[in-house]
Image (cartoon, rainbow, N blue to C red; front, side, top):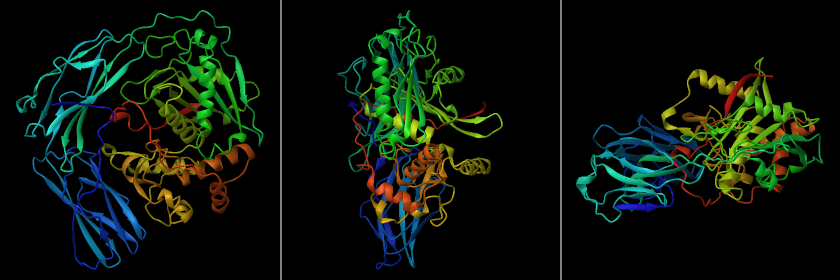
Amino acid sequence: MWKLFDRVVPILLAVVVTACSEDDSSSITLSSGSVVELYSVASQSRQLSFKTADEWTATCQSDWLSFSPRKGSAGSNTITLTAASTNRTKKTRSASLVLTSGSDRRTVTVVQSSKYAVFDQKEYTVGAEGGALSLTFKTNIDGDGDLQMMYTKQDWIRWQDDSRSVTRAEWSGKTNELTVSPNTSSSSRVAAFVLAILSDDGEWMGLDTAYVSQTGVVSGYESSDFSEDGAVVVMQRASVGQGVPIVLMGDGFADKDIADSTYARTMEKAMENIFSEEPVKSLRDYFDVYAVTAVSTNDVVGHGFQTVFSTVPSNTSSSIDYDEDKVEEYVDKVPDIYSEDALVIVIVNSNGHNGITALLFTEQGRPRQHAVSLCSLMGGLEDEEFRLVLVHEAIGHGLAKLADEYGYTANGAPTDKETKQLQQYHKFNWMLNVDVTDDVAGVLWSPFIGDSRFSNEHIGIYEGAFTYALGVYRPTEESMMRSNHSPFNAPSRKIIYDKVMELALGAGASSFAEFAAFDEQHKPEKWSYSVTRGFTPLWRSYLAPPIVKMGRK
């Protein structure tokens, strides 16, 4: 049968493993459970929870299973087990993960099924006029009801016969007909279709996803009043230090948006959002904030439209193309600003889930503090995703030069050249929140590990960061620089704190004790966010990594 759902099918499964012990009196205690498969597709994950009396390590010789962290301290611990590749062997396969703590060992068996279901095509595009569309897929899963095609609950896309009963014979190679309604909006829209299988514990698990994108209608509106273009508004002056400069501007806003204060409200909300997370929430007095008015000819962004910064949000990733020279031209309209330290933020008038940051170098190859972060409005000014993505891009990447704390299975491990590039970034004090060592004593955030003041964050060494699934490590399982749905972790908060002190006061890096004392008074109010939102496609689960641009002034 067909099933509607309002959110993505979770791909993080509750842990269920089998374990055998070489010693029943072992100091390693595993959570109990029966055997449940990892399904055949790559990136399916489950968590293994256990307790140890001493420090522990984990090893596994199977190349299809990745896991993180690989070592830890005594107490309660969690390892994330992930299928690194799709099982195409047509047979179930297993991997043995060995936990060692002192003289004790436990072996955990993880099984990956050979069941699969895949779409013949991953992306479909429909014009604004709408029309008929066909989806086809293949599977080796038997049994009526074991497999379902789920899709986002949208009123603009439907099956041509909603009442029909789908039989087992239709699952393999069957053409499924859809009807897409006309799009009267100027914005594009996306729906996702997920092939899901019912797991042994009753959860629907996604095996493959296809996306249907529909373009918007061409807007006929054109601005005629450009008198406010280039106007600069001082939104905030620093009361401490010399003032870290932030320049806000928008793209795809027409003269009518300036006249009815839509542009001004957008700039105000953007400023409110960037100061919504610690530690900048408590360091707001160290910043100068300016807004530059940019009047676009059209109030729609993308190919074929005339906007000041020529932004083009991608429909198949979270990136945004833009006119670099035009952005710099509008930054230069702010008088008496030291633009070399300026964080530039461009709010794009689009409902896409897009965000990107450009980190800049001089023509001589020297890193610049100056950066450009772009973020779409997504669901509007009050959308929580808009706030979180803006913080991730502008404060995380743009101000503090933090790296992303996620990794893609397909990327594997970095090459020697890529490892050396990250180490070079470290010499610039960039991307200090990730490291290529898993040595507890040598990792960049070593002082935080085991410190009780940060115990709620479970700081350790977790594999998967800098877009690589293997060989690069991050401090916490979740964070603002991973999924955006947690605050900045403590190592990142220290990096941000040090950057603000450097730019505003000319100070060097704080001592661990100094930062810990500050952080004790200004901790995030909670460690995770519950985000109410529309469907976010799986390929946009993580934002695009920052782009590094060479050779500018």
